[in-house]
Image 1: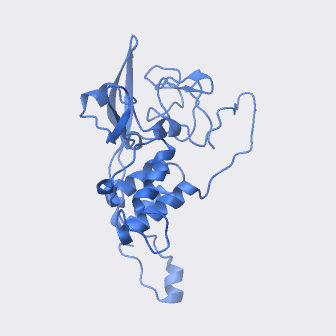
Image 2: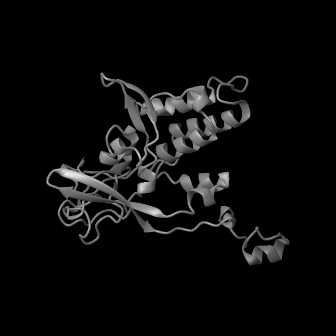
Image 3: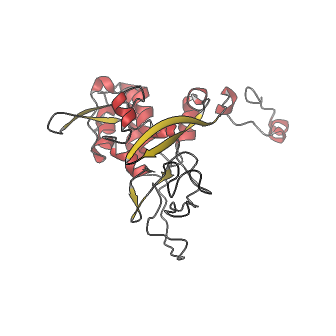
Length: 259
């Protein structure tokens, strides 16, 4: 069940995005007049990013995650330590974030309001990214199959344009950028696990600690520190499910490697 964070008792939703995901959303590059000229990866080693980590980020971040000091359901959400929706409040977020995507801000469990919840199983953005990945691996960034109207570059930029993200160039489109785009565009759409396993990159993406953000408020100033929340382990064999033993007995199949 997805519910909104409390602004008083911190009885927040059961899904709290990790710092690992938040770090994946790019930073917009602007010229002196404020016009966006490009984007770059976020980095905690960059002093500007570390001092104000939510400034000038990919708009999809704010549409996916409830950030400290942003407004949700008519209230300012405080996930800093000691805040109304932060540690050490009972049931407060463990990561410093709450999920915004899929959450209806008009729902209030205290007043027993409800609404029909629509879940997207397949949408146009996924279709474009599916096509971009297939087209890139078959024809490169700017090639396309006979009869097709889009290249991989054009497809991925259609997705980015919807969120007012600057377009990528042909040289920026590769398997890594496609994997990145799928991660941020389709976060919490039940795609990530299956994507990573079909790429056979679970040991790269998932075999690492899950991080949280510690936000400290001093006066009106916030400072940020990334801390480890817990360790996670992903073995290569987990790219495949084990075949049930009774199926092996009936079929004579060979068990998947590692199982």
